[in-house]
Amino acid sequence: MTIKSRLKIMIFLQFFIWGSWLVTLGSYMINTLDFSGAQVGAIYGASGLASLIMPSLVGIIADRWVKANRLYGIFHFIGAIFLLGAAQVSDPTVMFWVMFFNAVFFVPTISLSYTISYIGLEKAGLNTTKEFPGVRVYGTVSFIFAMWLISLGGFELSNLQLYIAAGAAVLLALFSLVLPDCPTSNDTNDKSWTSRLGLDAFVLFKQKRMAVFFLFAMLIGAALQINLAFANPFLHDFALNPAYEESLTVKYPSILLSIGQFAEVIFILAIPFFLRKFGIKTVMLLSMAAWTLRFVLLGFGDPTGLGFILLLLSMIVYGVAFDFFNISGSMFVDKEVDRRIRGSAQGLFMTMVNGLGAYLGAVISGQVVDYLTVDGIKDWQSIWLVFAAYTLILGILFAVSFKSRKSPDTVEQANTVHSV
Image (cartoon, rainbow, N blue to C red; front, side, top):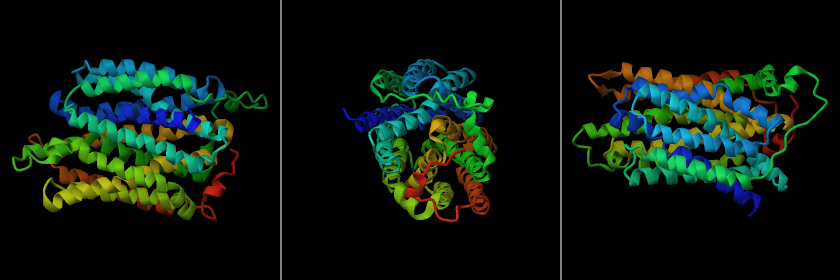
């Protein structure tokens, strides 16, 4: 089996695990376990708390002491145990802690999967910027497949979604045994304590451009977590209106949401062109504009007629919103840093996005949802418009604070290694 084939299977299983529960767990907790918006937000925020330290710490370990492919398998096996535990839980406090410890081990595997991919592609003599999107797209395909499986199987409001995710995690842990071997750095020339401890990636904050980039990556990460926690419960709430309860939107909300992942497939493959043509600043601005448009469209959408068209459009723009920030950001970071710290740099990016950003987004959005809920009825239009205003302001601030290089960031320029 070629390295690319192994990487595609790895990425497929990686995002199948996430897709099995990430979008639908909120509906399961609200509709089946009767958790409040704040409780759901806190539980989704658990992954953010776990991500404050773990991706960076694990990235450092992978760079310096333990091979990334070995850590990857161990972490997926442990994560599977916590998913099995979560399937048994009905108390919000216990659920928070179980999902917190699952995230402690799962979230770092995302950045590890990217590091393994970059190293594996380079070992095969391939250009990572050109080839990685073609590998990463298998993650989006698997996310779609998982969402359809959960929805068509009738598991959206069931704990079976967690059992399925756990099974896939065990399978991936076993498959990790055949992943490309990832070297660790034994550079004896490192003299500083930061180098000896593997903290070089944090030196990136001394570069104003990178510091601004990481700050806004965190703030966009909040928007992503808002979407993950409440898009599916929003669609389920249309069932409260008798006119909508038999609509496809209410019966199969995950299938509707999966259109966003179909859009991801297209826009992932377009990333190299946009980075080469416009540079990272424009690509990130397009992402923020897409987040604003998505939230506005959700605010005015409904399951029938023109409202359904608005919902469909919101799913399509999600592809731009996610890919142009998450995937492009990861590629940008990989090309901006020294090869010796690529694992810890990816971990730092994941910490900012899925750590600080995810935690703030989940907790604050949960409070917003509860504030705009009256007598158990959520004012979803106002909720989505508040979130849209947030991402609009974010885009304006990014436009004036992030400085492009004198010449645009091109794919060719990105292949030049910039030492920290």
